[in-house]
Length: 190
Ligand SMILES: [Zn+2]
Image (tube, rainbow, N blue to C red):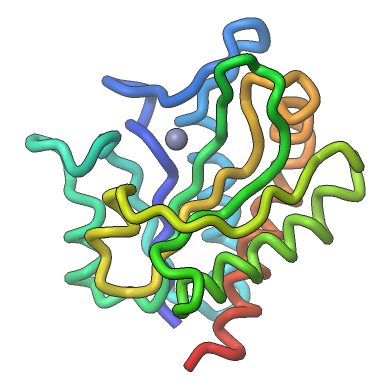
């Protein structure tokens, strides 16, 4: 199985670091990258072929930067996994959610497995870490422009102190959970 891993936002934060937690000195681009790289290692250990690309494609692909969805499409990935951290206006939201283009399709199935594995692998460390569920989004470029099933995982809220702590202290568990969700899906995919 060929899995394309896309840590969100621009590598090194230039020009877009994604969401930030100024107090704790955390940037979404760095956390997503670290979780994505580790998830890629787990997937390779499980026998998957993996490509990882982080590029600047905040509101769709940006000219002058590597085109993430084109790269995944031409490689012929079986599944596309984008990894992000969430943020909320009042800094008080918590939990993990996974977006897909079509809840009833293969992407929706993969999103469900990833949610389930994060629930099993990370939530035990903090019962306040809510399962926000599988959600449909048809405007995210990575879901809209990919030709294979695709998911976008919002691992946790970087601007919430408890979620940020989980993201820092349990990165390994996030990465393992995402990889397990992918391989769970690989076993039942059509
Ligand atoms: Zn993001």
